[in-house]
Amino acid sequence: MSRNHLPFSAGELEALPLFRFVPLECIEGILEHSCVVSLERGERFEPAGPLGRTIHLILEGRLALYYDVRERDDTPLHLERGDIIGQSLVSGEPEVPCTLVAAEETRLMILEEDLIWSLAQASHAAACNLLGILLRGRGGSPQESFSGTVRDYALRNQAVVDPLTGFQSRRWLEGILSRQVDRFTASGRPLSLVMIDIDGFRAFNERHGRAGGDRALHDVAKTLRNSLRPGELVARYGGDTFAVLLPETETSTAWMIADRLRQRLMRTVIDMGDGAMLPPLSISAGVAEATPGIDGPTIADNALAALDRAKAAGGNTVSR
Image 1: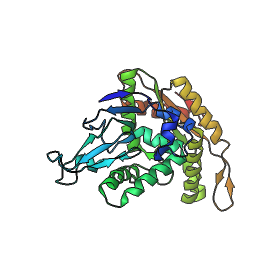
Image 2: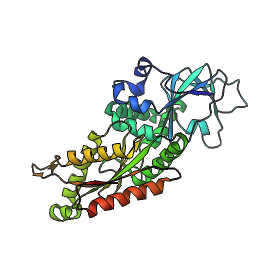
Image 3: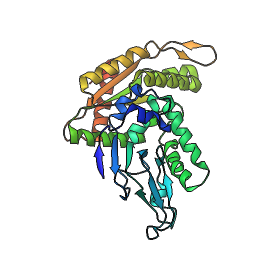
């Protein structure tokens, strides 16, 4: 099984259900971090990573599904171009072993968890396409259960997705951050993390109640989402604290991104939903960069320490 980076064309992607109507220029940075696996005819499919955290999309060719590897004379089911491989058919239903074998030369795109969420954030069309693919898998046939298992992954529970902002949670961030630090260690490419707090949010909640606080969090989250580029990942870390993960970004650039977010939020009025509009909220931000030997929790602690310095300086500023 061989791996290559970006051996696919725009035309090839546009023909696949996942990328239908998706402006590829909006997700080019995400695709650069994907990779493609090539299988020769007769070669067994081996997942590149945990299937609960990875999407394998068939770009070309077919995979044959056998429920019992000892009975290859049975007519197999086939997965075709554009299908997404999910977990249940690879691991087998309870007490029913199965395997996947390339029925012809086959190429698969691999999108890991951080890229999947980044894709959904970067393109509404891609998010809708993915949801459509997954929901079509609810009928119960073997082929459909492929998509169904990814649906179970995509529609995460509230421990992973924050229902108020639609952002991923601290739990999600910690897993992604650990993998990004591993990539930094292997490649040496820079990695930065920004922690953001809303200034005076407790007092805002006391004045405007929980409903007002929720509206403020929603509007701040919307501004953050609309101000970040594909590949720049944002999560709700807890309360009024947000985390922005910036792969391949040095501290100086991360500081500028954080300051750009600060300035945009100062121009974001809070829509209370009943016709009332409240003045913008300011933020404080702390920036930290991965360094040799660092781990995920340490870079998070460093960013939080920088955030504390920004708040101690009076807020509405960025510290590192």
